[in-house]
Structures are given as structure tokens and as C-alpha cells.
Image 1 (cartoon, rainbow, N blue to C red):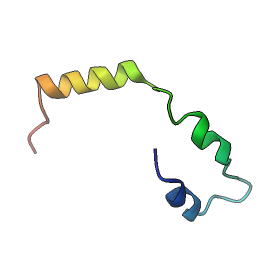
Image 2: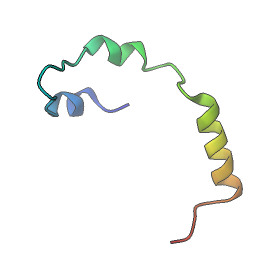
Image 3: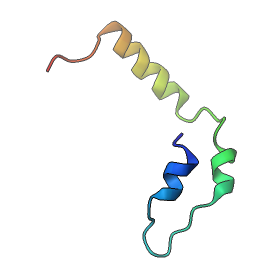
Amino acid sequence: MKARKEILEKKLPKGFKFSATLETKYAEQPLFKEKIERANHILRTVGLPKV
């Protein structure tokens, strides 16, 4: 996750607020774990595309 300092420095559009409670709520949850594992597996086996 991005550092809280970076998030707070960015200006949010009018009407949006940053909730500090969300930062700790989702910090340790492995969101999209299956997709990340699959992407890492593909990168290990195939590698990055040549430019």
C-alpha cells in the first residue's frame, strides 16, 4: 500500500474525504491473492515481453 503521507499529500476532488481507518483495515488482507499468484507464475515461466 502507499504510504499514508503520500496519500494525504494528494489533493482529492471536492466532496471526497480520506478515511484513515481504511488504511489499517485492509493492510493485512490478501486481496486478489489468486490473481497475483497466477500473474507471478506466468512471469516466472514465460518472462517479460521483449520491447
